[in-house]
Image (cartoon, helix red, strand yellow):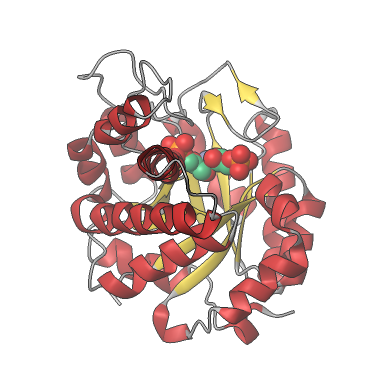
Length: 314
Ligand code: G3H
Ligand code: 13P
Ligand code: ZN
């Protein structure tokens, strides 16, 4: 299936505009009907371009046929400016499979391999992706935190700015994920005032003028969601995200894709806990899943407006 048959676009035009007008496009992860609908509703409410991100484990969870059927059922138009992106593709085969079933963008995450091996694998995937007019993201530097259901990265290393030109030129990738202090999951910082490494970001942006950069692990972790979760029986302590001001600052420095998964997970969990607590007699999942969907839509809308700056950019 070619992604154009699903009304999707690749990220080339999306990023060109984001760079030109200094905003970031949100990449929200989805893994079921409710998360998909929440993200698409937010895109329509805000008239924002959007990247629908699917991890390998989320693809497995939904099943490729169900995932593509849901995308088809969403009646997406190229005018909506929506890309379907494989998040943290771990191998050539995973990226090729995503491209073959209808993804318009893939990430090959070879960031834990030695530099030359990362180049080689990213280059091979880029070549294959470009044969299908699909965009490709790769990563330099390692983020700490939970990256998928199976890997928990304990090591982390910042991106070395002196590597980026060689990496981009040798691989032919379309966007580069960099490590400047963000991390996956809900426990990102030890202190509230911990700063991202804007010096690294600035150095990379100077070396790659106009080139799209990506921030992973960039959830804001709204504290009101943590409070709600804990108020209604949850137990999450020490959760801290990336400060909104710092994310906004990054959008002005060639960061044109910001990845958010944990915020929606927290939103869904908070809404479901509250709904079940307030109506303990309810056993109709549609009731608490609607509450989750509504909360996730609101989180996407708020972040598009207050962080990404992508509202009305279609
Ligand atoms: O960055 C990774 C995402 O949060 C995906 O996580 O593999 O549990 O879907 P997942
Ligand atoms: P968060 O855990 O900060 O939401 O990061 C998500 C992400 O980077 C997906 O690739
Ligand atoms: Zn990520």
